[in-house]
Length: 474
Ligand SMILES: NC(=O)c1ccc[n+]([C@@H]2O[C@H](COP(=O)([O-])OP(=O)(O)OC[C@H]3O[C@@H](n4cnc5c(N)ncnc54)[C@H](O)[C@@H]3O)[C@@H](O)[C@H]2O)c1
Image (spheres, rainbow, N blue to C red):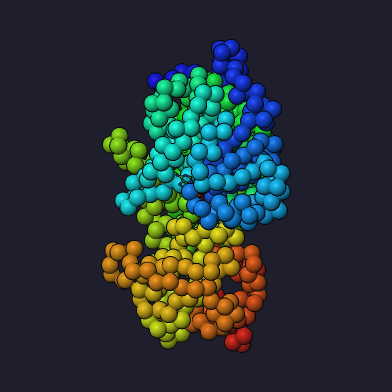
């Protein structure tokens, strides 16, 4: 059994007096210097929250242009307003750098680097490994190191712990190690229940002294901490959260295919089922899964279990169903065009919204890329509009091949009204709040609505007066 599993409590009294380090008091009174490695969707809001709580925060990121922008007060993330960033910069509470040497001054370091997949759904841990390797020379006694990146159970013990020990530092005595998974919901952090402060935070430590330090850090910014008994429990809990969402979205995507075959409106079905006051949690279909988390993280679990000869059938099946959704959208486009005497080849098709999520400037794993790539592969003249994405690189997916990473084409964001008016078909893929749906419906001719965004606009499926678009739901 891992030591952390045996040591199940986290009370200060459990730690020997020698472990009640001055680091604890510096974390408690917020005089500690805290560092964040990776200033992305997870790391920047965290760093800003810690600086707002009174800590001096150093953010380290290898992306020099991002660091320059942040230091100039330009936040790359909508959830961190420029004004908030600028005031923390001018007060000296926050600074960004590309230099790991700045970590020599840090009492605490939280790692928020990416955890993507390699081809074949294999976890790419090189970001975590290289971050910890670069941090290693600056590890010192009385230091806290927390991993926030989503990863499989065992990572913190396997990657961070040995590197600390290799420096001759004792875990739980000299250096305190924790895992505290990031739960941010990008684009939603202005909702009162979804801020850095209000979303409960899972915290775990390698030893009781470790979790004590992790708690002391995060209690400064999070209303409710949820300590768990081991690093692996926290790592697993985060993967279960994301796998739960992936599997449920796959189920409802399959329900959408069933409803399509049956001629029933899937959105109405879900709204009806959601009136049940217990035992039903609504999820909604869409053009496919996107983002750095839900389509990716569950495969960390699949991979880990494969090393133990155990299949993860729900996740594998869910992945298959979700990955097939862009092709379903393209088949809806083809059918709708055919009904108007047109073919995909040669038709002008505008994809509206290419980020994976409403109001978030992130195209990672976005199904819009697949939709554009599949349409281009079938000979459509593709364009897109997205207020967040000026330029887009799309791998063209030739029909009948298995090469989903085909030759990329570069597209530039089209002018909205012209794009709507001149396209044979509009695929509404991301329902950004900036869009005026009434204008969209009055300007386009044919819309494939993959998000049910037009439910309130009230345009008929087949317009009679030619002044409004025909709408085809997913
Ligand atoms: N984006 C989300 O919604 C979200 C939510 C919960 C958890 N997470 C998890 O948080 C982690 C980070 O995700 P993200 O979305 O913030 O990624 P991101 O790509 O937005 O940001 C990561 C940052 O790390 C930097 N970076 C990469 N390697 C580095 C290194 N060795 N040293 C210093 N900086 C480095 C990159 O330049 C980038 O700015 C991932 O494990 C992700 O699964 C993300």
